[in-house]
Length: 125
Image (cartoon, rainbow, N blue to C red; front, top):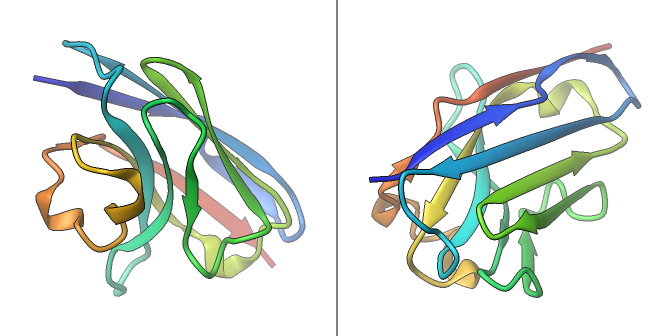
């Protein structure tokens, strides 16, 4: 069993930045991909970013490409640097651990077994 705890959410103005962090515990996730999804009220869950177990391969959703950066800080932690935030980025951001490939995370969210509780990010206009 894997427990995921996110931190770093909050309120920021348009154009600002936030850094989210996620720590995994319970078992080793050294060989697992990690990533982030988000969900805004009334909207479907959206893939944000994924990083491979080695930290070298990174993938981003179209709406965040060029503004967000995911990194594997250690074997069991992942962070998401979010820059140039807009009100459209307002959502609950959830960390995930995925035993599949990071490149497939965007389309295989239904197969992901481990999800964090989520952290709220609110961007004011």
